[in-house]
Amino acid sequence: MFCFSFQYLWLILLFSFWIQQSQAVTHVIYEFHIREAGAEREEKGELKNNSTDSRAEPELKITGKRYGSSVILGKNPEKDNNYIFVENATYFADDSGYHVKYNYTIERVPDLDSRLNGQTLKTTVG
Image 1 (cartoon, rainbow, N blue to C red):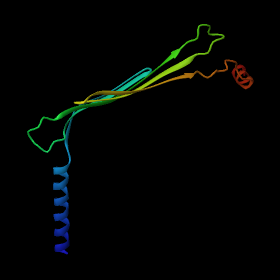
Image 2: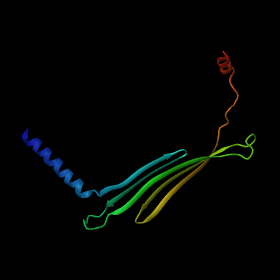
Image 3: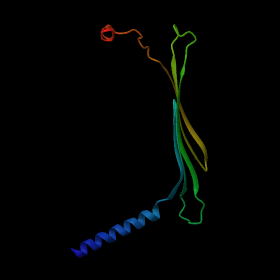
Image 4: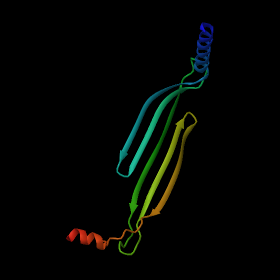
């Protein structure tokens, strides 16, 4: 039984050494989340060492996403429709440059019936 546990421990040690040598070292420098009415932003900056050479400078990588929405009102509120403008952006920056992917959508605001239901009126009046 002692021999089996010793082999198991040796295997774990060997596996952890392999992971340490083969994986890149990453240090998170900053991370923030901002949430406001109609907008949201998240970003993370990290130093990543992809090289096996310990003297090589680590690469700064910044990843994030941004979300925002706003209402576009029609010129005549009684006749024209209102729309919601939604913007999603995912970005990534490293030594090769800044890359961003945008997604824009415009959706029609659903019509809400402003009339009161008869049951609601009965309950309110008593």
